[in-house]
Length: 261
Length: 295
Image 1 (cartoon, helix red, strand yellow):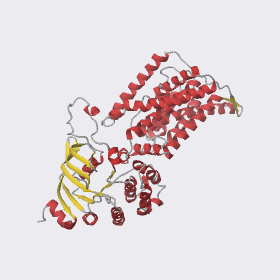
Image 2 (cartoon, rainbow over the protein chains, first blue to last red):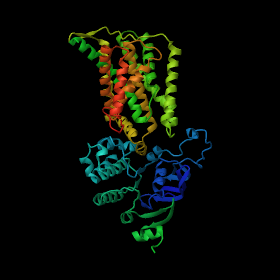
Image 3 (cartoon, rainbow over the protein chains, first blue to last red):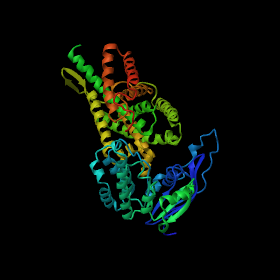
Image 4 (cartoon, one colour):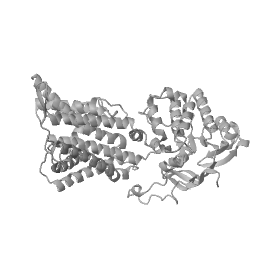
């Protein structure tokens, strides 16, 4: 059990009363880059938001570096239609604890803080990593990865392009000194040129020994980046593929949707 | 209208505007960060004034007045900070938090008002700032306390702006106001930041209350008028930027001063409300507002 960084065991969750994912088992080892691939709308983002502590898990266990992050037991169902039971229900996981533990989630299509400048956002970003060493190294890595952010440091986030906004999101995640960085569709909706630029940056983040969990729709990018790939379908993990057996785009499509007639 | 009368009315409008700005900013800070409207804001003004009055009873002189103001502001910050956990925080995940917050803040307002009546009684009081200085301004003598209240209001607003724009906590507060989820993912304690916002609102209300209490008489329910004025200011100016209610407050203050002079005390609120309705019809997001509300 020592090599495992993140371990999800039979994790279930969703937006009550709708169950979105069920019995998810997933492990990420130290220094590993892992991919998660699956069709849109099948619950990948909900799963990751749960792991990040934004949504309460229903059942199962989230362990990070041996420490349990969510409360024990099963989430109780709503007991009364008439009483505001939510008032007395405690959160089963706290985003703050997750971030403190070093698990950093970069949201999909993150709008960040529209009225703040890039500089202001990057200034408050390392608050989670306060007091830990390595912030200045990470700052120079971020400067290296995204030279464009330096040019736009006085712009408000709302005036940035989608790609630049994604760069700020990833930079914010990196400045928190992640022990595991989760990137949720980092290249979603970007132009091919920006997509390439961002993919290269993410490959360099992996080369800088930052453990990664990446969700993306681009199979070629994902298979070249990661050590292991999980396929996610209909709210659960359907298979796990290691480096030696990385499939092509067509093979994955066959695995997920069956063979073409 | 003689020129010295004009200057006198204008300056009293500006002084009024400074106090309105102080109150309206507190209201808009809560509205932009917590997404709720704080109906207890007027009661905060009243409680701040009464706390300062109590302290000034045992600390005479201008120094005593300064001490009373400072202690009242500090007390109200702590009061607002704690109150957030009582009346807003429990409902933060409820889908109808806006409605619930209307009820809880109204309840808090009523409790505070009656608490004041219980402790200090219904008789009118006035804080004595012990500042007898008068400043000659273009042939018009302006009371020192008027100038002091304007200066302190402007200083407090500038300090608040610096806090929100430069300090790490202030920036984190703005971040939590603009995108709560993203702020949580950065590890901020959003509930704590929201409580600070509520505390700041109460503190600015107290500061306004101290000066109102030294300009006119106070009674336990005098907070209703400041609440209404700050509501007009916030609607009039919009809350797109930290500065928009401030500009609006000075406009409203000057308009009020001139309508009192020309139309009389009883018609001034009608003028202000007419102005507010006109703005709501023509530019519903406020004179300096846009659709986005941010801190």
